[in-house]
Length: 162
Image (cartoon, rainbow, N blue to C red; front, side, top):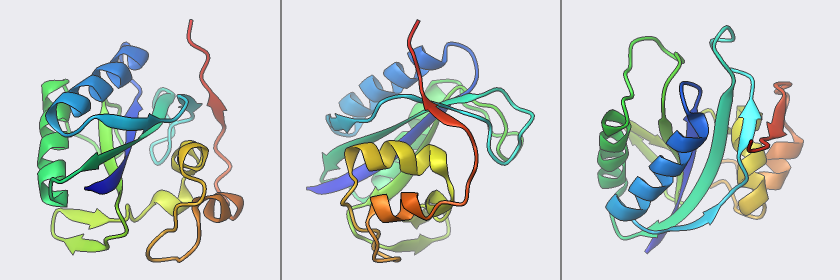
């Protein structure tokens, strides 16, 4: 079994519901989710004129290959109404593989660890909440160190459920 960290994001429609639905579907189609971060509200990144996101990081343990995990999360995104029209465009759900254990993968359709995670507060803040001591296999620094070195100034705050 390998520890897999996933980032969930939603900025369209019933964002809270989409995150919960994604967690349930991941648990049933990939592996039971072991740890869930708080939900964070974040300004849109990359394409800054989009609605704010809700983000959350999950950890699960699976025997599936990284490619199988990718295939399943792409299917879940599609099932949940995700369309890919504009880079960094709004979406009902986005699921990214942040880490697949300490494995480094460079394939045409998959790069792990996620190549942008060290630059993004909306990823590192929830990740540091659930795995502060996890060592990034490329940078050889733990998540807390990467978070402390962030230059990203996006506003990321814990989401208050209504």
